[in-house]
Length: 98
View 1 (tube, one colour):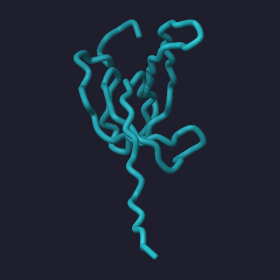
View 2 (cartoon, rainbow, N blue to C red; view 1 turned 90 degrees about the vertical axis):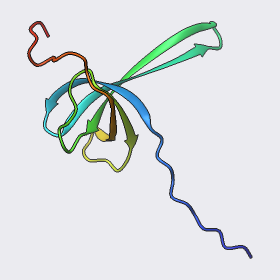
View 3 (spheres, rainbow, N blue to C red; view 1 turned 45 degrees about the vertical axis):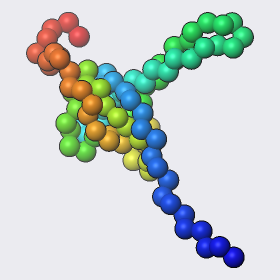
View 4 (cartoon, rainbow, N blue to C red; view 1 turned 180 degrees about the vertical axis):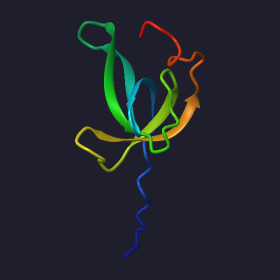
């Protein structure tokens, strides 16, 4: 009999853009998925909004981040911030019109 050592599951990293930062330690992000529809032969874009746990409050609107799925923190929040890939080029808090 061969003893098999189970390796921990590697977290799947998803790239997303921060669209809202109105809550403490939470960021709302938008994930966009692009695929080819088999029946209609058309490129389809599907957008989904998720709540992400940001314990240090380090993200800003417009940042590109990597997130992964984990243990649920609340009813709607089960994704965690892994790292910030790119910071936003503009300061949204100072601008008017949003």
